[in-house]
Length: 222
Image 1 (cartoon, rainbow, N blue to C red):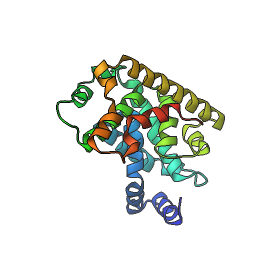
Image 2: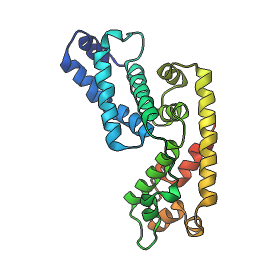
Image 3: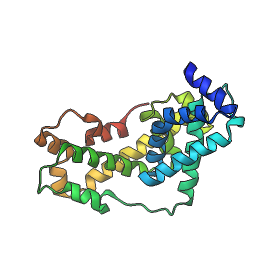
């Protein structure tokens, strides 16, 4: 947390709503990214992010200045998302049963780069949705928010060893899900996978959203 943010936090704790608004502006995107990756639904993620900020504002008196504000805020958002997931009816939807992905897999028209990016984002999110919250959270914080093991541990109120263990198991589970998808995909889909179609469309630069990157994340080392 930089010096300006420290000032905003101190002012907000004294009741300065404008200072807290500055903190919201600074962290609204990272918090939304977390809630979206945890919940997989834009509207629900927006509601969850808003609720996280409301809870943070009402609990400013409980905030420990020795703790990074972002870590404290992520902890509130994460716990709220877990509460929502516990209340949600558990339904597992495979990629093959997803009509959005079925439409994107069609090869009647050459896909545009943004459609390919959207397809890959949906694929990654679908895989994340199949992970339990205790494995999804450290994965999102590590690879999307680029938090350290120590920061993740503080956010989740667990030890660093637990974080590393859960990340290892999360990657194992993603690898299994990825292999299952590749094995069960229709022959036409396997023959012309996303990287092949991206090459055919001439869009080779955006590797972060390619299926290959999905596999790399699944098989990544600690």
